[in-house]
Length: 139
Image 1 (cartoon, helix red, strand yellow):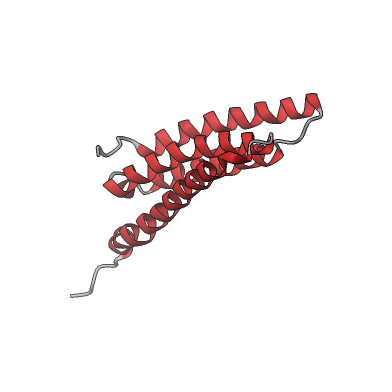
Image 2 (cartoon, rainbow, N blue to C red):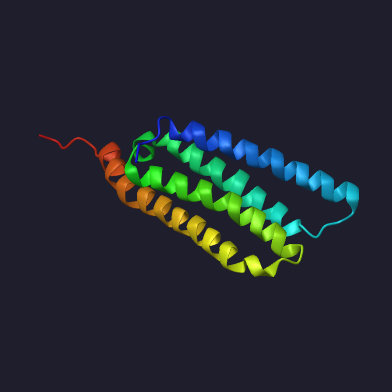
């Protein structure tokens, strides 16, 4: 799997796409008066816009942890799982409960991606932060 160039910027760009979609859905719900997809709107904002933007900003601030294989796997799991999760959640809310297994698998993909991000930041990042904060030892 190829490591992603400038992962922070890519996460931020994808986050903005989700932001536009979430705002559009919110406007549509407001105009129509049908708020049955409120949970999809909330997930698009929190998992799509906010979480992805924060991940992007963290990868911009600590670029070393965004350029490893763990970050690449995390990116693809998240960005394959989240759209499927949002579509199947929308369909479930519209009465198509037979898609629950797909919804569950896609939600699990996103959850695993979040855990990979946490491991990457906590473990790979710990080494980087330790090196950055090390003060010179007196001779």
